[in-house]
Each structure stands twice: as C-alpha cells, then as structure tokens.
Length: 317
Image 1: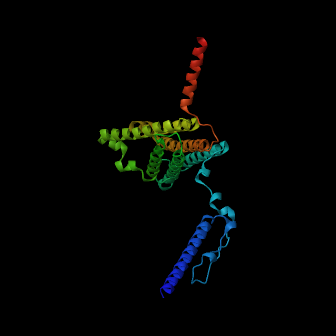
Image 2: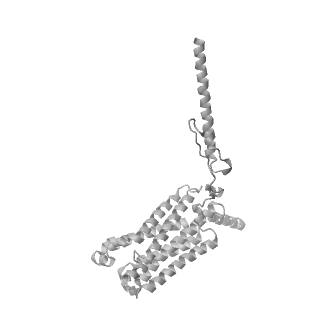
Image 3: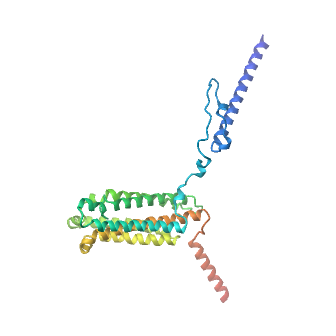
C-alpha cells in the first residue's frame, strides 16, 4: 500500500513537471513571436498559444504592406533641411512670408476700417503677423528640442553643455506665447508708464534687454562652430535690439506714422532669422553627428598655430 501511494505521488509529480515544461515552452514560443512581430514572413499562428478550454482563435492578417513598419516611418531628423538647396528653399519661403505680410499691411492699413486693418497689422496681437510669429517661435522651440536630443549623445561634452538647449526651448516657448498674449500690455501703456514712474519703466526695459542679450551671447557660444548660423543669429540679434530701442517713447515719437511698420518688421525679422539660424545649426549638428561633415574645433586651430610657431623657431635656430 505504501508503494502504491508513493507511485501515485511520483506519477502526479511527473505530470506536474510535464505541465510546467509545457507552459515554459509556450512562453518561450510566445516571446519569440512577440520579438519578431514586425517581420511579416515570420508570423506565428495564434492557435499554437491557445489555452485549454477555448475553441476560437483569431489569425493575424497582413492588412498593411511591409513598408508600414517602424523602420520605414518618418523620423523627426528627416524634417531638418540637409541639402543646400533645401536650406535655400526654406530661407526663400521665410522671405516670401515677410514680403507678403508687409504688402498686406500696406494694402489694408489706411483705407479699411480698424476691425479689418487690425487683422493685417504687424504689431497687434490678434493679427496674421502675430500668428506667423507664434508659428516661427514654436518651430524654433521644436528645433531646440531636436538639437538637444542630438547634442546629448556627443562624446566629448564632459560638462553637459547640451542642457542649455532646454533653456533655449523654454525661452522660445514663452516668446511664442507673448506674441498672442502680449505680456507687455499687462504692465500698461509704456508712454504713460515712462511719464508716471520712469524708474519702473527703465528697470523693466533694462531687464528685457539683459535677458535678450544674455540669451544671445550664450547662443553665440553654442553657434560659433557654424559660420552660417552665427551670421544669421547676429542679424536676428540686431533686429531684436532695434525693436527694443524703438519701444522707447522718445524714439517712438520721432518715427511718427510708420512706427507700426518699422517695429513690426524688426520683430518679425528677428523671429524669422532666428528660426533660420537654428535650422542651419541643426543641419550642422545632424551632419557632424552622422559623419557627413568634418567637425570644426577651436582647439585644433590653436594647436596648429602652436605647431607652426615651433617649426618657425626651429628653422631660425
């Protein structure tokens, strides 16, 4: 009787081991099928993974072509203009938008009512120009995030200077919001503020100027390896400084009737050239990261200059 009972126990243990091994085999087959789910040629039947007690199984059907896989999808880096022709077309598109907005402002500013002419103004918050300014700065914010995602993989960036591009992206986001919300209006009329409390007016003006100058100086340090983006950023900084100077009441009164046209162009040109400068730098970062362009370094020039000096000294001796 004891042997019979032990034999039954051994049989039950063997059946449990076989069941566990069967479950392990099923899990291994399922994991392998999940890893190869993108391969159309290696589709495993779901009937093989069917549990006991179920009678129906849904077979996978190839409703899409193989080109719908992840490897064939568009990446965010594909939106960066890489060829010189693409960069030129991008710059031409931005210049065309600037010219059309100026023509619309000149056409609707005088002979049309204020409700209609305000939609084509270059300085009002609810106009088409404000929408394009918001779009340009939002695109600049996305370009900064793309540069951040590429720069964080640079192997010789030991100090982690790539994190500054998150600050640039935040500044672009706030600037795009300012084109619609216009935070300056919360402080009241600038001419009235300058006459009532000149200290507060000049402190706010100096704060804006210092913030813009600090961002551009730090941006010049990042863009120094790309001459094209550095030149475009310099033009953008001149446009932004001009817009800040034009907001001084004495300068505003001296300009007169064409103040809206001049101020709107300086601000919009600043946004446009800033976007193009960031796009050119993103192109430079992408090409250098993929080995399609030689990396320009400042240290290499100093080393070559020192080597030339040593050779000249040796020749003289």
